[in-house]
Length: 116
Image (cartoon, rainbow, N blue to C red; front, side, top):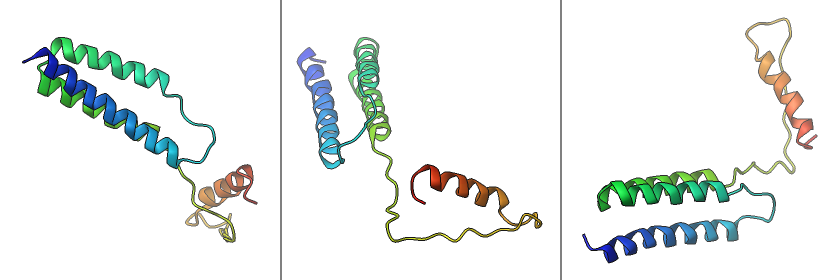
């Protein structure tokens, strides 16, 4: 393979990754995000190993799969809107079939998130 083709292929992968991360950052509301420096550095290291040890199609496929995993990991975790909603937590401490664990966990988690 031509060395120029390899540069273009991996360059296109990095351009697609950067564009996708920029679009996700533009759509996301400002707030704390996940650090991307270490995962991007690991992806660059993986790409260097792929270029050195694997043929272009296989190395590009492996690097693209790692980039997809990075995009999945970097995506924000969204909570459903709770404004104007109510939850009725029921259960009986006497009945073992009722979801005692679920209801007590819910009663602990909802005030912790400032929703109550």
